[in-house]
Length: 304
Image (cartoon, rainbow, N blue to C red):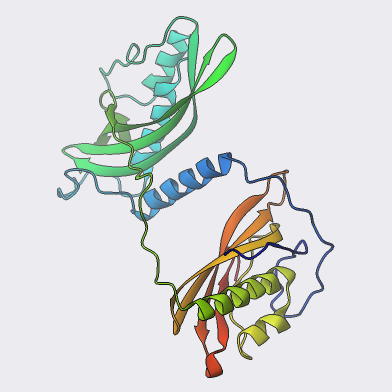
C-alpha cells in the first residue's frame, strides 16, 4: 500500500558545504499536465538519437560511405527540411522557395503534400531519430508532430515518421528525393523488467529511508543525509538550478539486500511558470550492520 504523501518546504539547491534551514512551505500544484508525457517522450527520443540508442534501421550494418557526415549535420539538415516540407500554409510559391534551400538540383517537391481547400498544416515539433548510410549519402529518420488548421480551429494531426534521403557532397548535404513514410520507432506499452522485490519488512524500511533521504536532500539537510548514510555522506545530485520540490509521494523499492534501489515520486516546480511535474528521484541503498538500511546515493537529476 502506498504511503501518504508528505508536503515539503520549497527546497533550495543543496549546498554541500553547510546545512540550510528549510524555506516556507509551498503548496501542491495542479495535477501533472498531460503535456508532460509528450515532453518526456520527445526528450527520450532526442536523447536516444544523440547517444545512438535509437533502434537500428534495416541495412544499418552496411559499411559507411566516406561522404557521410559523422557530426550530426546531415540529421540537422533532414529535420529542418522536414519542417518546411510538412508546412502547407496556402502560399505555394513561398513553400517552393523554402524547399529549394534544401533540395538537390532537379528535385521538385512542390506538389508532394496536398490538403483540402481552406486547410493549413504546421509542425510544432520535429526531431531526428536515427540514420543509416547509403550509397552516395545518408537516410535520416525524422519524427514530426503536426497541427492542422481549418475554419479557424486547430486539431492534432498526430506524430508521423519519415525517412529523408540526403545526397552528400563536399559542401554538405542536400535532399535527393521525396521523404518515405516509415513506422514510428516507439514501443508504446513495452513491458520493462523490474528488480525483484525484497521481503515486505525490508521493503517498508527501504521506502521510509529513501523518502527521508529525498526530504533531506530537498531541504538541504546535510547532517540528516550523513545520519542516513551511517555516518558517511551519500553521493548527491540536487534538483537542477532553480527547481524546487513541493511534495514527496510514494516510493517503489526493488533489488537484493546488498543492492536496493528506490524510485521516489516528487512533485517539483521549475524556475518559471505555473506547472508542476511529478518526477522520480533515484535512491541507492544497502543493508548495514544489524539490518539497518543505509543510503548510498540520492539522484535528483541536477548538479552534484
